[in-house]
Every structure is written in C-alpha cells, then in structure tokens.
Length: 258
Length: 216
Image: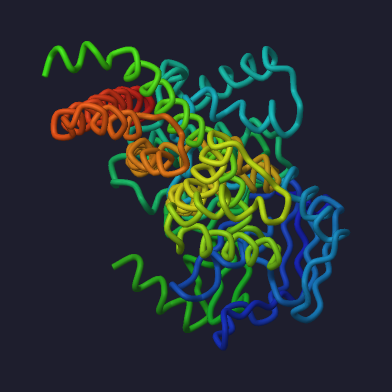
C-alpha cells in the first residue's frame, strides 16, 4: 500500500485545454504520489490522453498549474510560453518519460542505440556506461538478444518493450504510458503488461492511460476516471470496479467489459 | 563518326570535366544552401519563413537562362564582374537550391509526428531532434527526388554555354561549326549526357538500397 504521506511526484491544479472551440480539459485537479501506479480510464474524448500529454508539455495546456518533481509551470491565459517556462518544461521532460501507443522508436537506429540515445545525447552519460546499462535494461524487458536489430524487424510487442527500456534508460521519476497496448494484438499485450507489472512492483511511479481492466485491477493503486474533461472519480481499483457509484462509470464499465 | 569522335576527344574530355564540375559542384553547394532554406521555411520565426518563401519563389519562378544571363551580363553594370565559370556555378547553385530546398522540406515534413514527440519526451531540444532524429529520416525519404534534381542539374549545365563556358554543349557547337557535322556532334554529346546520368542513377539506386536496407 502506498504511504499517504509520501511526497507527490505530480500535482495538477485547475488544468484546462481547448482545441479551438472544443474544451477537452475543463479544470483537472489530481496528483500522483511517489511510487504510486495510477490508471486513467474513461470514454474516448474524455481528455485522458490530452491530460497525459500535457504533463510533459507535448500538449501545452491553456491554464492551470502543473508540478512535476518540484518543478512548477503555471499557465494563465493563452499567451506564449516564456523562456523561463521553456526551461522548466525541459526540466520536467528530463524527469518524466513517455511510452506511446505507436511506440515511436527511432527506425534508423538499432534497438540498443534507441535505448542509449537519451542518456548519451541528452544527459551526457559516458557511452560505454550507457551501453552497459542499456543492455541490462534490454535484458530486463527480455530483448537483450535483439540489441543490434533495427526496430523494423521487431513485433509490436517487442517494439513497445524496447520503448519501455528506452524510457527507463533516462532514469525518470515517473513514466507516462499513453495506451501502451492499444496498438497490439491481444496475444502480444501480455508481454508488455507483464513488463509493466514488474516495473510497478519495483516501486516505479507510473501513470497509465489504458483500457486494460485486468491490469488496472491487479497492478494499480488508484483509478482515475475521466469524463467530459474532468476527473469524475478518483478511487481504488476495488471500489472502482466492484462498487461503481457513478452512473457514467457503470455505463463505461458495461461498455468495455461487454 | 568514330574519327570525328577521336579527333574531338581532347576537347570532349575537358568539356566532360567542366560539365561534371558545374553539375556536381552546384549540386553540393545548392544542397547546403537548399537545406538551410528548407530549415528556414519550417522555422518558428515568421521572418525566416517569409525570406525562404521569397527565395524559392524568385529562383524557382524565373528561368535558369535568365538568371545566368543576369549574373554574367547584368551585374557588370553595378561593377560586379564575374568570370563565366563562377557566374555559371553561382547561377546553377542559386537555382538548384530553390528546388532542393523543397525536396528536403518534403522529406522533413514526411517524418512521423511521433518521432518529434519521442525525441522531445527524451528531453531533446529542437536542433538536437532535427539533427539526430528528423534529418536522418527525412533526407532518406528525399533521396529519390533529390536524385532527380541532380540529373536535371547535369542537363541544365548546358545553359552555361551561352556565356562562353566551354562545357559539352559548347564544344559540340564549336566542333559542329568548324566541320559542319552538327548532327554527329550533338548526337555524341547527347549520348555523353545520357551516360553520365545513367551512372548517377545507378549510384543513387545503390545508395538508396544501402541506406534503406538496414531498417526496412
């Protein structure tokens, strides 16, 4: 169980974002404690992916406050980001890692090169050290044998495991997963989910947008349910799946469990 | 035809070298300039974007022959006198850069948006992302159209003959005038242009295969 007094890794207050006239986030408040595994669920269009992408500023929110590992960016109105903001964003990006639905491995680099790209060329880690650590991470996701292949030769599940190794190589304080198994055949999902479970067991802070009910039930500490751009419910997986009080949650669960 | 070929061989030899120098030289310079124009064209700064747009508009929108004549015959009125070869090289460079910039730009924007996002989420800034992630993929995508541009450029060097640069077309013209055997001379240089471009096509195909094979 997570110690409720442990520090927060992510703290979001009053976050809003609109695409044109379409408000996608309408005042999000939520936080993630260090070591917590939080699953975000919700119907499509509820803003869950936008929220996740806002946390490392792949999407720039309109207003609100985002605090990640003590670095705070405050957005007010629609004006451009200042240089100071850019600096904060760069800091946040170094402390967060992202795993994408479509993997986004670098196709022109080998598996190992993908994994050491960030450490060597962003953090300035010594190449030999980075390779050593990279191989250990590939071993951890069960793909050490593929280290010198190009991503084009891998299956979707293997690509996603490499992507997880690549994110771990940056030694992030939190990993953001954006529907990591949605692009995979059901048969390949378990390999990825098992890697994520192991990761959760090691105490990694994880924020995961997913529709994987089983994973949420047995690996998550909390489920955040988003609906129409707000956090409609924020509770334990047990509460969420067994005793859904919210009518929208019930509706949603019927839909995905059907 | 063979004796005519043998007789004009010394002239043709140096003419081929001049044609290759103009073509490959302006391609190298034009690629460098073109890449900078392409980067300016997709820049966040409106002024750079506008300048790049204007550049392409002017040098792609006017005939190469006019650009050559303007540099060679027009600039001396302003005290800038260029020798024929530098004038031709400059015109070909400026002209090819306008086209090549569009070839590069199309390669760059063809790279999946997710590649930018993956690089940024690793903490890479704009230039690091561009140099390490986007350009290696975008330039590969651009190879076929850039190759076409190079071949067009080799043929465009023939326009340098109008400002007395002794390249293939001018040699054919001169020898033709001296011997009245125009037909044979132009067939000959036509064949030489074709041969050069065939070789370049083969080189391009090999290069494309090499670069692509690894990660396809």
